[in-house]
Amino acid sequence: MNKWSSLAEQVLLGRNLTNEEALSILNCPDEDVLLLMHAAFQIRKKYYGKKVKLNMIMNAKSGLCPENCGYCSQSAVSTAPVKAYRMVNIETLLEGAKRAHDLNIGTYCIVASGRGPSNKEVDQVVEAVKEIKDTYGLKVCACLGLLKPEQAVRLKEAGVDRYNHNINTSKSNHANITTSHTYDDRVNTVEMAKESGMSPCSGVIIGMKETKQDVVDMANSLKALDADSIPVNFLHAIDGTMLEGVNELNPLYCLKVLALFRFINLTKEIRISGGREVNLRSLQPLGLYAANSIFVGDYLTTAGQEETEDHKMLSDLGFEVESVQEMKDSLAAGK
Image 1 (cartoon, helix red, strand yellow):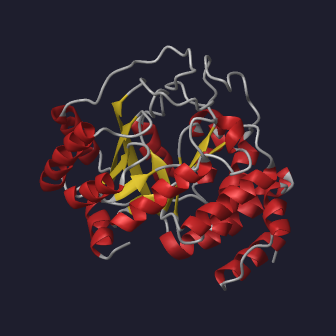
Image 2: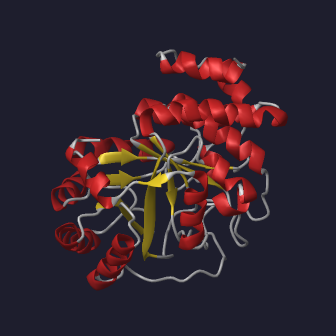
């Protein structure tokens, strides 16, 4: 048995990775990556079999953000040419939900730019979510920025199943990415979502000049947060942002990152998210031997792969899309 499979067996028996073992995954020789991904699949298969969860984003509010996040084309310091519009109407949110339902996508993600939502914006989301639940029965994830406690309660009562607020990077690297809010602001929002009863979703962006130790720290921080869903984004540097021109990633390293997150967060939904097409490239399918979830369609301000290509990829792998009914059964079971 190779060392990666042996390590997978040990973590499945309940042993946590040491820091040195975690770093060794990121430093895995390129010629051993297939062995590493096979080991990651041992863990993924135990908890998720060959099922893949599909997610779709609705960019409900674009631009107009006062924050200075260095990766974001919608930030106040970005000169990238993006569409700017206020919160879309309820009908548009419902149209997006219908499209997600028709494509057999289990989780519909309502995302809005900005530091945090106004009460009026929460009103719109609440009204839309109630109708989405009644009409389509989708799992709904909201990503609206920093929340107030009473807003979190309202979203939960309306039927929002999951709240996303990414930590994005490690605590030590956070000030290099943004100074308009703190790392603790982000952690506190995730904790607030948990306290309201919503499932916590929090992830990262890899490729923002962080060290490998930062990547290990991110994976461990999300384990400590007990995030149910972990989106792993790979930086797609956009002209006009502070990180314009940064291109530190290659497909094999991205696979090692996904394997690390699976080794540390064994039971959690790990989602290959923004930047997968431009960073994993032809190795996208291999990423699903560690991850069990993907976004389908476009992201916020960048294009994704055609939905039909995503479905072909899953079919070619012999993986199965989790159906909307399976998603509902999972929700009913509290998973």
